[in-house]
Length: 451
Image (cartoon, rainbow, N blue to C red; front, side, top):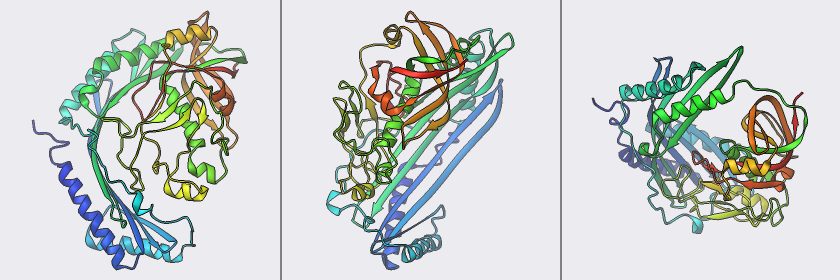
């Protein structure tokens, strides 16, 4: 059967088209009197299907493009965007951005990154692996995934669905300093959400996988079985008494915890003075064995990029070495605001890792001896200004280094600065499904509020 999702789109030809478009827009901006201009253009296309209880719920084909244009009139800046790339729409969007710039206040920190800093070496990072999947094939895979979950245990009573997604994208960024960078990539995923019952209690859990290369995805049966296994483990849950206890954040949650640290050392939070790690550069923020670093040019990485959103070449760097904060996360603009140099992180970090230790999860449980293994977090009780942390949680009570029973309806609370300094261990069970990768995190002590 002909490929319905990807064959009509020649992603490399589209990338070339976007490059031409970006050059045209910069010429138009120059024509309209801009002193400088930068343009980001992107296109994404793909297929997503969702099934539930053996029936197809949705089949969605998508093809979206967008262009963001920023023009400068001296130190004044204006931005506008469009999805229409006709010459008339392009001219109108440039004019809209120019009109905004003319009336904007001057900002001494505005402007493109220095021309001498533009990326010149743009290697192929092997991010493009199309799946060649049509709708019928995707549906079959989703049904296989869901069926594996539904039959994994007699306590699995219902399904919230299984889904398959396959997308490809092209991205081009250019500015009037003469830089044009581009790339194309793919992203494929599969997931399953199940509901289990024990007596009157019902619990819901899920599992998923994501990869650049579809050949690296877990099998559909494995994803379904894992979703079922996680769901039934949560049945017959109990509450806990309130107390101060050690906590392990499971690997799939650990990246989110580390992301709060990244938010606190990001330029925007720092120049607004809204970070609990203000003025901590060069200071101890983790135990002295902790190493947090990024590898932006990792071949095939889920977060890989050869250049940042300012056109600067990405590079390997440490953010925490020997427990010390060695670098902030800075774009050109935030660096200027702080009187520093860009870390080539406009748009964020790329492939961030906290170096794992030698213990797997079972060994971490032994080390903790008694406490809470957290496998789900709810709510958004994080204050980046003060570091205060409070979230609803579910997971498992651990005693004598062994899981005893599932736990639900508790709240865990602490302060992020204290949590990071009291980190006891990082497991080697690294979750590699995201841009921030970490093993399970053992924190020495947190307040657990229950009964």
